[in-house]
Length: 440
Image (cartoon, rainbow, N blue to C red):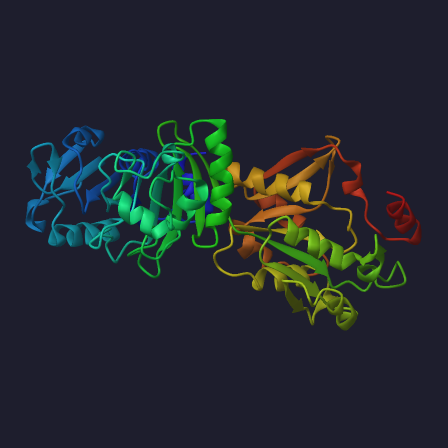
């Protein structure tokens, strides 16, 4: 997908965001910034730099304005306008504080995207910040930390790492060591490394660039998931090719509030391979990397909660469970933190659902941030679990009565994930269903 979409700056995610976006780090900042400038659907885009740009990069813009004060900027025409300080030798000077403030005011008043390069790395794939770096404006709403995966496996020297000594210090690497994914993770997630000087309220996005081979794409995907402990999202891809995957936190919501009237006893507590249904489902969700996992209870709440209370998950008791499944969906979504990319709904009578389908759904979401993704079994039957992107949450919170998430399918593009395991279609409504499930 495009970088614009991976950053959730696309109109598909509600009102098109006009964030001030700062790019820091190393390994393709300028390429990524200008690619984003070209992807944005705005008539005008402002690009500025609080650090140096190479003079050879100026032609990436449609227009270059040298401004040492706000008075020197008369207008922002259509296209991509680059604003810098004067050109000295082979590089530009940083834009002045007064000019940057004016650009911010102009961007806000006219709804113009403002992109800012706020770091320098001497064309190296990796770096560690000096004491005075990075000069991120305090008004930046999104900060994109770029790291070049081509630096993996290289010795931690100035040949591949800008400020190599500081990089070793932050990572705990020894003299002579090469960059490993773990060493890179430590630097990117360090308060004095990749997280340095990011404004408190800004979205923090890690961009693992230069994923130009299947090997780097695989390594980048694993590293991206680990970085979600410190960042709001982690993107893996190639700014040169313009192809990106976006990894975000995915929650799991276990709907376990029903009374099981037709079955005659609480289905949530039926045995599945030595464990209650609800516990097996919650454990599968946790093992598949969903976080947080929310278990929504209602009927027989004490007993159901007792089956999962020792797990690392959140229990939400739905006092309105008798009004229908919609109330449990609302309770589950309302319990999610803000920095969640989406959620999967898991049903309490499907303990056979495995981590494989959860991984497949979340990986599909990373490829395109689709609003709804559902399994399609044997090319004809929709199945659970279903993944809902955060863009759907406002509508899910409005559901009422005995309806599920499918009640909003008409409003969003639904991507179907082909799946060839028919056991995904099994649920337990009768004792006969239970016996069929136990024979699996």
